[in-house]
Image (cartoon, rainbow, N blue to C red; front, side, top):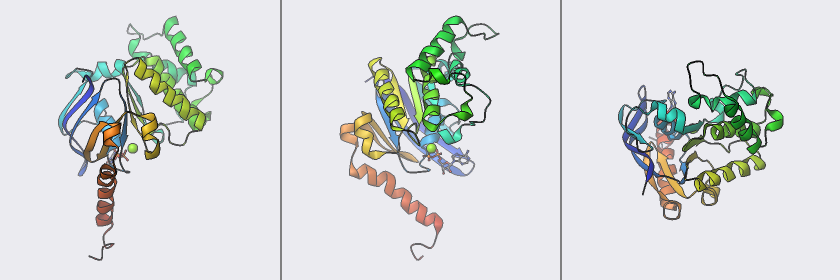
Length: 254
Ligand code: ADP
Ligand code: MG
């Protein structure tokens, strides 16, 4: 199995909070992978650790067969679509400008002037996401579904190999859901890998072929057919309930 990503014994802390502990994970190249787990399980942190946005306190990340100096590889080859509530939508930029930013890592020269080709690629990505009529609109004037498609268009313009999406279907319309999921299928046909934090367990089987259960550590990972089990669900979602009750204190009468 060729892998897109390998994490070895990765731990991430925020001050005294341990968000991830000893995570070992391999994601196959060309897979459509879902990451699931309860709120606060460390799913967003996992994405940020992969992207180098949060530095692990220990462990090692290897991406697309590379072990070291991952920054420029990430800029060129890894597209990230953050959780919508972590984005500053007041940022003064148009839809076209945001999508053109996807070309940034490819633009040569210290002036970083986008070429005609860069602009054409940004327009093509907008058309694929059915956003061409909104190209000059400010991003604070978009619906949730349109915003999500802007990010996907930027990812398309970037021509990445690995796509990391953090809850892309949260708060969007059905049409956008279909567009995003068709896009993941097309990525797969091109041998590209998608890793998606997903909150709807009922659609896992339809949309993804590889699954990772997370709750501070990786509970299980593997092909969807063998890994989507009640046991893993209980282990991932049950444990956090107990932690929650303990943290709240007094619920169990102690
Ligand atoms: P998920 O995406 O699965 O809901 P997160 O990765 O956002 O989980 O968070 C995991 C844990 O780390 C939670 O307990 C959360 O409160 C904590 N956390 C996340 N980001 C920060 C931060 N910037 N500072 C402090 N704690 C954080
Ligand atoms: Mg999250």
